[in-house]
Amino acid sequence: MNEKFDAKDKPDLEIRPFAESDFEALGAFYDAAVKDRRLVFWWVGEQDNWPNVFGAFEQGRLVGKGQVEVLAIMPPESGASARHRIFFNIKTLPERAADAELLGALYARVHARALELKRELPAAHGAMLCFGNYAEETANTDYFAGRGGFAPLNKQFLMRRELDGGKAQPIETRELPDGYAWRAFDKLTDEQKEQYLALDREIWPETTIGPKRLEDMMHQPGWRLLQIEADGEPAASLMYWIEEEDTGEIDEVFVREPHRRRGLASALLARALEEIRAAGCSEAELDVETLNDSALRTYTSAGFRIVTEEQRYGVEL
Image (cartoon, rainbow, N blue to C red; front, side):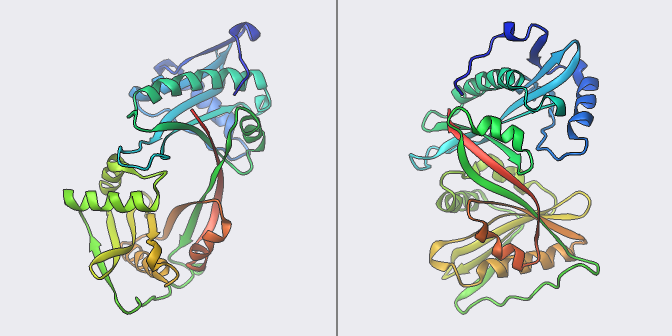
């Protein structure tokens, strides 16, 4: 983003890192910001994250908030084109949604912090600065997407499926084709973790989850990895766990290239949904990242419906 902003442009505006004394102002800001609209709104997290959070204050009132976070760290063995992903989130009061000076001033602080975070990441790969907004957040998206070289990355859809009740679509049983077999894991050895991460890099070389994210997933309650194998080698995979409020979370659904278009993804989803329902859950959720909406067909045919659509953009940092 090419604009330069100076504090003199808004003498009553103070932008500073979040502090414990700001929680009351944050609560009022959140209530006003989300009233009658849906936003991708990040909470400030624990105290060690507050250096990544910036509040914009006018006469003690919080009028805007910026936040930045490293969401993906590329391991050294990733391809040369892989980039660390640093995301930012900037939100204002509704009446300030088109305030270019406020948005620009917050972005200047967030961008500077992103550069600091980049210097702490492994130097083998560059970094992208990214943001994501719900489809209806047009003013915020238009401001950032129209400046500084931000280009579309993908769309992320939150999808949900009911498992019980009159509205729940029956779970269709899926038999595996000849030559394929099931394997399930409730924990992974160190060797199996490395094997899984290698598979993940094969499928998503630009956005591999990395060992930390894998460990975080494995520590979720009820975590399980389902795999379909061919000749003893993984052909397709997904993992799920149980969130609070009896929701099954499905993630990391993939089918390797030689085994696609054989119904393996549908078989994985059907088995996962049956197991999640047997665990007492009333619904299941998953996130889908895609640039092609047709990739949603497998999930809609399995009974999932789109709840939210998030549009993501990025630029080389």
